[in-house]
Image 1 (cartoon, rainbow, N blue to C red):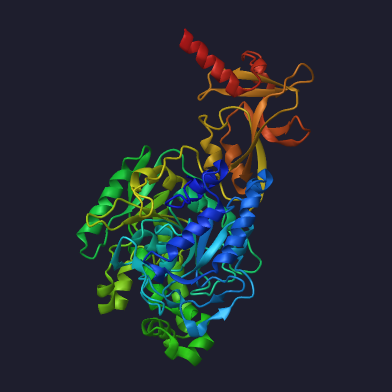
Image 2: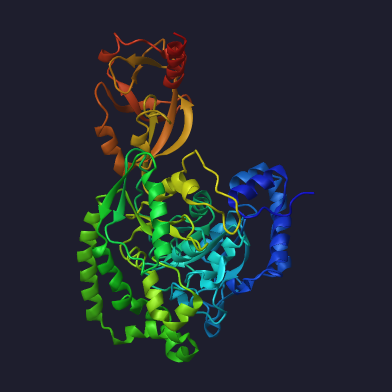
Length: 612
């Protein structure tokens, strides 16, 4: 009998199961709804869609899976997901965990619209700290969300329900939001990957704002690959969101990687959290090519203080101004008290805080320049519901020690599950990078997750190791197409010069039959020289890469004589930029045109060397 569903739900496993017929979206949806009626953790949801409406979407997905073109065009076809209930879904109420605030959305938020257009199936809307104000997951009239691993403990917030629903295997991924850590703290508490994009990379149109200028929609998933696949669907400029502005990308570092580690760490006396951190740090330090460098987080904490002690709290007031003025008594008392701090602030305070932020930004930028990325604990500790109830503001503040400064500085973050604590609770670490470093973080996360990440959700399954690099996100800036023929080919010695500049491989193709290829003597690493000839040429294999135009000049500057960049003719008539060689350099260089390309020549040469 075929299994009704794979557990835990991951995008990769569901895609494979759909393709080979081991299960179907219809079976998966039915299994999810069956589980939702019998398992604990219902407080993770504010609204679950009508079963028949979801099954109707699943049936359409079953039909589309039979069409190869639809499978290729819909990267999330049949994948179940949930969204935090401050994100609009057309025809459904948006509550932001405040029933008196609720309204029925006229349209999908941009992120929901893009996910549905990619074939994903929405199961429902999840619980949160009211108005996305909190890191604990307890500030909701719909109930405090319990940690899936131990119900006495917090799930983290404010995206509490999205994290819990994903960890329990009710959905393959879920959307949260993150202003001060709400997409990272719950990931750490629930053994998940939490993708916190660079501000501006993902649209917030159709999302109830917390701090509108720095809010980010985040992704909870079981693996880095799954989170990256969802981000690839979500990322991109959106005219509906005035803060939508994807930053220039920072490519992955493929050689020596400088990982910054804080010189001073805080765990609030939690020895188990500290032990879990050191276990994770050992894994990262043992990764080939990693060099640890010291980072002073003191200036970052100065930035963090501005978020709640400064006038950015006024953005929270602005988001719900009329409602708070007329229905303030309907709000959670702790949430209302936090937002009410704005009432004593002025425009003068706002400008002073802005000046303070810019001064600290320069210091933080210099500190970040010491490393390619930074590794921190996701949270310094994890609290019980009882401890939070005794001191709700103090316990919440402790959780933001490594998160509150990130969005104010425009940084990207990736939360990763780490080795479990000795008491069986999850513990996580977070990778941080400057704006645009999303791919850099994801690629390093992919490399280390199978050693850091012991379990997928509540299951005993381990994440599989993935050898292939993650594809860059769709470009949001001008690019130039460059044809490479030699040491810059995929997997060869100089390919890093493309990858680290954020280039994307477009295709493998051939030149027009008007080139000769020569093995240049004395070059390290070995390089070919390709020369255009009037007659007697061959069609040579090349790779075509798209590179951000802003990085093209530095790429060209690294090319040594007698090589250079010129205009190449491809077999299909296109003309692109690509490697050329001075004719004077090739008379004494062996002609290897007959091999049809540099890779084939190297393969033959290496085979001959082995046989000798």
